[in-house]
Length: 292
Image (cartoon, rainbow, N blue to C red; front, side, top):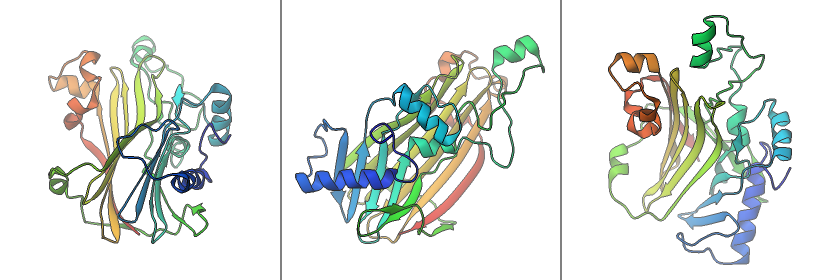
């Protein structure tokens, strides 16, 4: 369904081809310039940054996407949105796509602990019927992006990159230093209102500074009166180094526990996760070094 969503196998290759064609056709526009084709390309320090933004995937294409990953997709999928970062000398690529993010919603190792909405729990107690599905209906994902390597012809293979566990951490003090922003972008991959019982959103942010770049991939979910989750992947690279640091954290808290701590019990206070993410305990953390 080219033109409606980027698939898992060829999505990075397709976008790299679009970016290359745009660069050959005309000089790169200023970072602040509008992009009527939805394709924003920026180059610096042997790196190319590409953000593609498009409309919500139409229903007929959404059916095809859902069949390919064996699930009923969220209400809003931005299947033709993608962030692609490439390092020309090594061919290293980093990319984020909706289809890949959703593929990570499937349960791992046969674990299928389905969340129940508060209304159902109140009315039926323990008699709520589990859904006969293999994925999390709240679209919770542990997606950390795709790493790969592009060959001389621009074909991206999703392998060939060494990923090592590390004790190194992102230097957030370095990130707090005020630097000019050379290029920034933000795009959504999917969103769902959980049958009017909350919100589930996957989004990507990137910023490029003179010293390097920083990516934040964020999934957050609020199931009203039940649970809030925040899964974030942070990636930081300093130009000139041969690696980047990737940090993944999964946070979660039940509203029952938040209320018991004296926090507000009205859902209107929980619409912006940035205002209360510090209240969520870390359930999992993974630290990697990605070698160029």
